[in-house]
Image 1 (cartoon, rainbow, N blue to C red):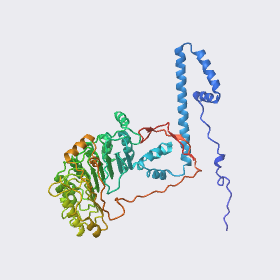
Image 2: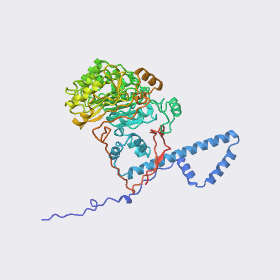
Image 3: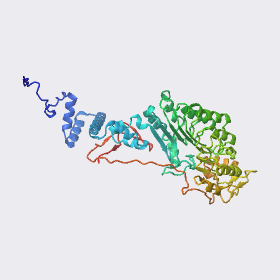
Length: 538
């Protein structure tokens, strides 16, 4: 027997269409609302002018009363203008939130791929972007390096606090040019006292800005890493510091103590001691894989001790890349480092003093030397011709099997066996051609001047002190044409570079013009404020 279905008009009733739902009744207006509505309904500026003039003549009997009434009108007009602009920004932000094609998570993911300066530009575009750009993942990789001073401690502190525990990489300071590729010996030490006009930014401008502390990093620029019980520095993987003249050992070591996960440390041109820095790395950064340290004053720092080298080898066993440039190093200490690190593949002792090359003896067949892929000894003033000959002979005989890049160039020539003041410019004992024949896979750089331009270390120290720049390339009066021996068509040791894709935005999506309510950081030295309006409309 079939079941009889009865029609119930109540249960089958349809939901009303949203357009049929009456809008909610507006809240009742108070006296101020009615007054403002009446005032805004007057569209004639002339009538407002005449009314205000009549009000001044009838109600203000003295000059002080008139001045008070005018000031009150100006304040009221400013308040009304501020309220109108705030409402316009709020309305535009609401529109952007509705019509922006990407969800919040995807937008933040895109912002996290931007470099630091581009992120600041995006944050200044509108309130919605400003809100998204404050998410911690957007500040995982902070790069505030500049060619001239533009960044101060406040900018660094703001970005580190926004990143929080998401901070992965931090780069600060002044870089005199583009970051060079691995294997390059271009000096990175820089001093603003000796800089010429760079990017239309003269030293007079730097002096005035420095007095205002508006664009100078000081020793406390890394203190946010230690704040919150060291939380921001806990997961930091990369720390690069360039030419921060006011940095000292205490501040640097304090920051390193808060970075136990550090893998990559690069220090250039800081007035810090090598021994204390390596002791701090040994005590706190046990996972470090790359260490690059270039002295601010070439040949002056003789602080490294053998126990420091031993502790570094024992406590940092994962090191694969070591560069100590411009320090006064001795062969016995260097041998402890190179032979002790079992995973070492990259070594750079360019412009270092006291290295004769004796540490290389029997190194290529032992643990710690047989994995070397890059060995750079460029412009080591005490490097002896006989030790270089022994090195190349070992390469020919089959040692250093993994070696791909070797640089023994010296703009002052190699030191002779008996007296290092006697320089060798055209060596007949160095088997360069044999190396190129036996090991065509090795890129060998051997650049020597045809004439001597030797400057002894005392004269060199005087020049460095006068110029206050540790640039070895500026110490020689001239360098004549050099002979370069390479086994490949490329004269540099470059790494691969990736590229990204650019996607266009649909022209149908219109983004309203609005200005940010919040102050945003400007890497050009100022701040993006509420006056900075950027239109994203197509």
